Length: 181
Image (cartoon, rainbow, N blue to C red; front, side, top):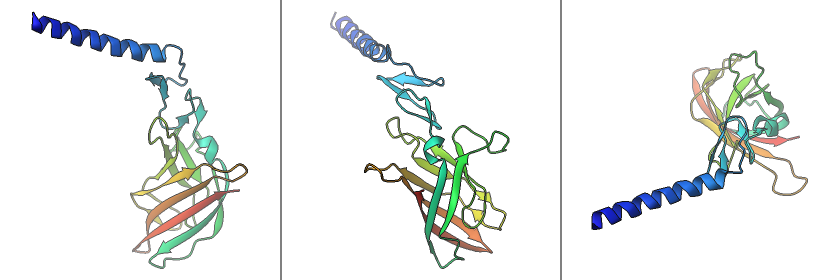
């Protein structure tokens, strides 16, 4: 009898948890085929916002001033300006979460992915996959950074990206600081 009572209580507990989850998502509409969990939309990479209806690329789009600190003493590519935009649908790199820099490390374009680090921190991680640029620079794995929204009214967003690359047989690391114009 004790086993039956424990089993009944465990089953009742599971139904209560499932009912709470369904209840909390009952009035939540998640766009773009996203799912709801515990009352929050879980956005796939490339989407953000309360209902996953905002493209993450929107906040990256525009002109940015770039300064860099590289080691060990590579060729100096900066400071310079770059334009970031969504990847054209005709590109081999096209994806809803892919952006491209028209200039990075003295060449371009450079493709990057926007990744969601968690349901509450959406579209702030920028990952640059390995790729070879037209000037002979090869971007290596592990190149990534973070988008920082403005914290003071009137301030501009910034982005810090660590780029690991090789050029003419030597390896370098550049710490790129982007300031939206």
